[in-house]
Image (cartoon, rainbow, N blue to C red):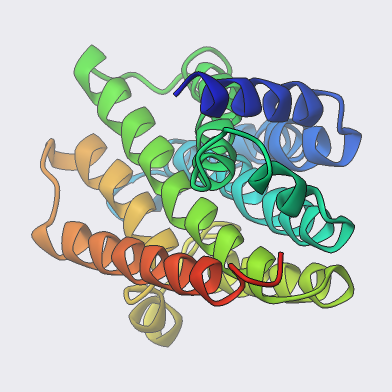
Length: 243
């Protein structure tokens, strides 16, 4: 366990010095919320004020971007460079590398989520009961696991040149059709309901609106999480002899 935590600490320190990571996870969501929140005072989305919906969406944007794009690229590059192979020669358990990456994703997503929620409260003037803030934050934070698992699956399977456009494509599809950039309606909303990004945001807006969470949202989120964990396990296992 000590080796896993040591690797996670190193990864967290590396991510904190990565400017591209900081732009995607902190700067972009904050700037977008500052630009939009005050412009939609009398607009609603999913039954809640648009500024409240957009708060949940921007918290998700930063958390998911860091978990997927940065992790997948880094895992692929380290696999290519032989770093994972070197770790196999140490006393550190084989699974420690993957676990450390996931821990780092969860840890580094916290500042992004908290910052946007604080903006929602003090800049967007979103008024909620204390427990609702906690549920929203935990829901978005837990959703990070989905994309951390996908990052492992992609990073272990593909080379760095392929990983970058692939993760960006997946990320854009998930966020666009998941209603992260803007609220969905009509056909797009029907499509979005099948995606974890949409359902994570709906957990937040449902909690704000009526204090409950839809069973459908939980099922969809759980299904994607299990699916990506299985993909990650298969990818790690398939490349066990080559990394």
